[in-house]
Every structure is written in structure tokens, then in C-alpha cells.
Length: 308
Image (cartoon, rainbow, N blue to C red):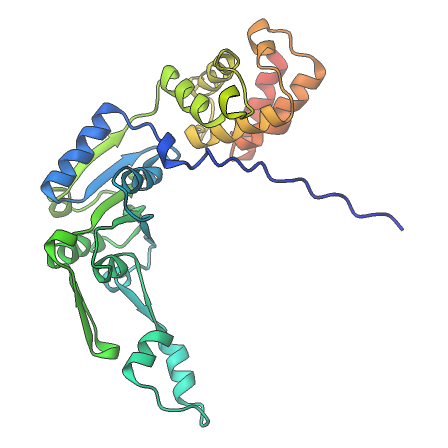
């Protein structure tokens, strides 16, 4: 009988999402400070994969707070979803079970109420970071509802006849991200601090890669030497600047791509020398699906390899 194949071990790298390695620009750092001083939410835009979501983890780590509470906005999200969700169907089914004992309001809360990010932050009685991710995906009224909720810092759960409120000194630190898929309400924009994360330049990409994937002999960490990362960054920038792809890869894809190339033993020097062998081309073709996200873009990259 044929033996089953051995599953490959995932490339786990604790540095990839280490908030201490997050490198905000001076402009972003300044606007974080402005938002904290004014007690206003910080709205961050930028290409997917440029570190908008990681910013919330960085802020929490920098100020010694717990990990961010996350609310992922959906097209169906309502204002109440920011605070809690009530499993009405499960409660109904329980109530119509003839053998079920009657529940107190406290038991109903425990069994059928699930507190969400902003609700947990208000209940926490300490400062927390709340990440409201991709707020532009939500219905148009939700952003304004978010601000109204933040100003009041209270909410009610009528299903269990209970209210929660937070003291001003425990005001949550709110980070909202948007991929600019649709315009946000003017009333909302007037009441937030705004920052757009530009795509990193070559020197910044090099620093990001080195911190997350570079070799570190002192800490016995494997990775490419800094000089070896240069041709990979240059190749990545050539791909983006060619304007041939329908969807350009972002920083997150670059990090994963370089991690995979290192694992496969790819020598970045061949890109500089312009002497790719058959194995080098095969590795690039194998790893390009990390950068290309549709059939046409993958074909564009495959055609580029033939010319290297």
C-alpha cells in the first residue's frame, strides 16, 4: 500500500506579526499622537497589505495595553453589532424545549449574548484599542453610528435589561481602516483624524524585510542578508512599476514571497547578474502566485521570467 505523503511544515515566523517590528513613518506616528491627544478615532487608508491592520497592534503594544479588540465590518453590519450580538434563534429553541429550566436574565446574558469589540471595550473598565476594520464595507450609516457610540461610551442590552457605560478616562482608542472602496460620509470624516499610508519606497521596503525576514546571527535567526534583499526589492518594484498587473502586490505579499524564496533556497544574486538558470526560473514561477492574484496577472509574470 502506498504511504501517504508527508505534510509540509508551515513557514511559521514569529517576527511577521511582531508589533515591536512595526515601522510607522514619522507622519503616521504624528497622527497617532494627534488622535490620542484629541480623543478622536484615527481613520487610516492605503493599499491592502500596507500595514493598516497591524497599526492597531502596534499602538496597543507601545502603550502596554491588551491586544486590540477587532470588529470586521460587513455589508450587513448594524450599529448594534458594534456592541453585542444576541442569538435569538438559540434562545427561542431553548425556551421551547419543554425540559429546559427557566433562565434568569444573568443566565440569558451568559448563554445568548456575545459582546463585540466596542461593547467589550466599554465593559472592560480600562483603556483598550478597538480596531474597526474595513469600515467602508459597512452600510453608509454605520460610520456615523460609530462616532455617536464613541461619544456616548454607553449602550443598552434590552434582552437582559442591562446597560453598560465607560468612564471618560477609560475611553477606547479607536483605529478604523478603509480600503477606499466607497466614499465615507462627510459628517464622519469631520470628526476623525485621517492618515493615508503611502506605499513604502525601496529603502523602507528593505528595512521592513530585513526586520521581519533578515538574518540575525546574534539571535540565531535565519534569513537573507541585507545585501541579498536588494535585488528582490528591485524585482518587486519592477513588477509594480510595469503597470501591467490588474492588481499590484503589496507589502504583505512581498514579505510572504521573500520568506518562501528563502525556504526554497533561491539565490537573489542571479536577478542582479541576469543569469537565471532553469531551476531559478522554476522557483520564480512556483512562487509568483503569492504576488499575482488572477490568471492574467500570473501570465504576465510568467512572460517576464522568460525575458530575464
